[in-house]
Length: 125
Image (cartoon, rainbow, N blue to C red; front, side):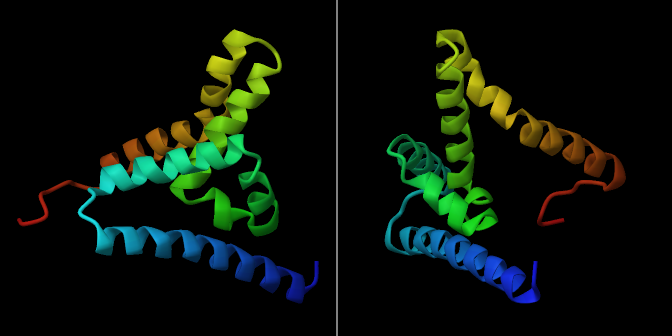
């Protein structure tokens, strides 16, 4: 890969990831929705766009810019479920869990390690 290709890859990722974050910020500013509701909306949007076949081209074009935001987690769950559904009904239910297991496991392990290293306290102490 040339340096220009790498730069283009970064630009596409920042463009798409930034656009997703900008949409979320507009929703935060213009509505009174809680952060949890907005997260669920974006995750379900990733699932819906994947089911319609619209999220895969975005992932192929933008890479991490589309897979890192929470909508990428919805894409991962839906993609795993659709792959599992090709094998049977039980695999359709467990396919999304299998697809997301590495990321969830890493989050649990690294959270545990950080809890061992750092001492927690409330924000206002």
